[in-house]
Image 1 (tube, one colour):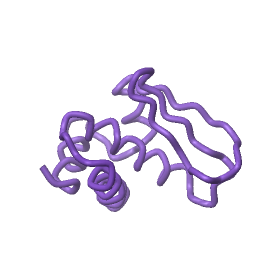
Image 2: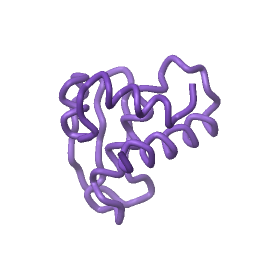
Image 3: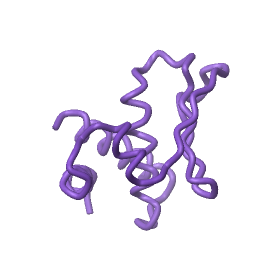
Image 4: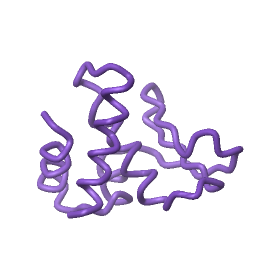
Length: 97
């Protein structure tokens, strides 16, 4: 499944393209922290938590959309590079809807 198709399925399933609502409806906890901006966000699969770096230059919605991509990519068996590309494309598709 490509990222654009995945994003559309998520929108259809949850009835929204609002990343905050999608996180809530999937029971993904969103935590806002500040750290040196080596990363802008992180998804913790074990704890089903997304940490958003408030020191990042990116918009919170974009960071959250990308990290939600990691949540929805969990079962796709992608390499790290493939998953990052998927998440970038997922976020772009989700935010453009």
